[in-house]
Amino acid sequence: MARLYALPIAGIDEAGRGPWAGPVVAAAVTLDLAWTPPDDLNDSKQITEARRGELFALIQSGALGFGIGIATHQEIDALNIRRATHLAMTRAMEALRAQGCAPRAALVDGNDPPAFDVPTRALVQGDGRSFSVAAASILAKVTRDRMMAALDAEHPGYGFARHKGYGTPHHAEALLRLGPCAIHRRSFSPVASAARDAAEQAATAALPGPATLI
Image 1 (cartoon, rainbow, N blue to C red):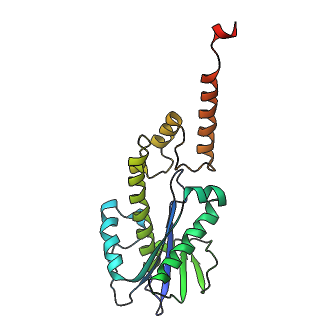
Image 2 (image 1 turned 90 degrees about the horizontal axis):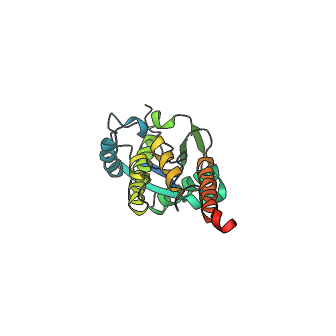
Image 3 (image 1 turned 135 degrees about the horizontal axis):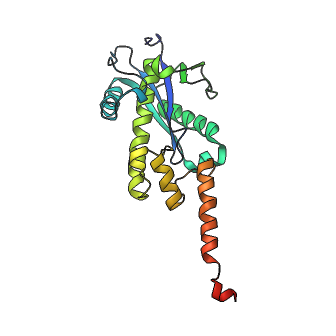
């Protein structure tokens, strides 16, 4: 993996573009050039949940600054997931600057970065190529996973702590059985379909019985 550039740079990544429920979370991280990244600092999806939690603390201690940005499920539905992801990344950069850290450039995972006011480079598979982007990947993933675990207690039955809102078979079954809850993304087609099914079932249940029709 490439070492950091010799200037203050923000690595930016997100977690939660694909799930059917919950927010999308982004992180912006500027690492201290004197800090030695752990050998296994990489794409968060390549690391176990337990190790991500350990790296979460290590990254915070090795960062000159970091910021977390969140776009809610309501904003995802109102804006679409692409624009909501850009909003979360922009908020993460703002939170980084609020800590007094002023990066002079940004590296953003993927190929579709938001328009920042500093030179910005999109880096495909950046969380496997840049330590700062990998660090942002860990912070975003752990933050979102913890949020979904807390939301599981507020919306029991869906298994959010287990699948974090992604479209697993368990989640699909719960969605069909229970219908969408308050944190589901209504603009996502599986959720919209489940909402229509729930509405049709409710309407059918409200129809008068055969005896009343006679």
